[in-house]
Image (cartoon, rainbow, N blue to C red; front, side, top):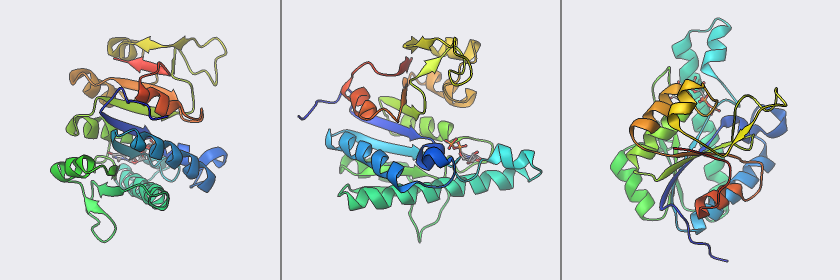
Length: 238
Ligand code: UDP
């Protein structure tokens, strides 16, 4: 069946942890296989698709700096980690016949193209999936913020944040059995109740630019495609 997408342009944010699978560290090929199937399915729906992948499965800057490392140095390591992840995803997507480009926020031209907004848009017009790697290119930011920034720059209709839980809850559902699932929530509520959606910088950027976020569970097969089709899955933050 060839479903009509509800969104023309989509930015998908995957955490680095998603690539690690149950091990929690590194890159698990079977998980990358499943994720790239999902990306291919969305791509086949004719959506202009950008993807931002985190790096938390390899390095997380704030954690490294808690252990005594210089924060800026640790953050650069984190940004490099996102590039490693993007190359893994690119490799498998290409082997599945999807045209894909990696663009890095930090120049690394032997490996991937530098991020240039107009070129990224051109790639998407030509039907290529663009993997935005290297975060924002700046320390003290997150890949969530990078995802929102690129989504705004690409004039995306929505940011889909793929996580390990069904959506947004009133508290952490993995710790609190009474946590209540919220099918929809406003940016204002996310901010005032400090709900775990994205970091504050990313949420406020979405709010200022009227960019909705859908938070959903990547582990439920087909959920990302369902969201792109316009089905009500996960939590809609708007
Ligand atoms: N990072 C950064 N600037 C950015 C994006 C990421 O410094 O614009 C660093 C930061 O240290 C972060 C790490 O890269 O901890 C990995 O990214 P993140 O933790 O956002 O990945 P995720 O949690 O999505 O796997």
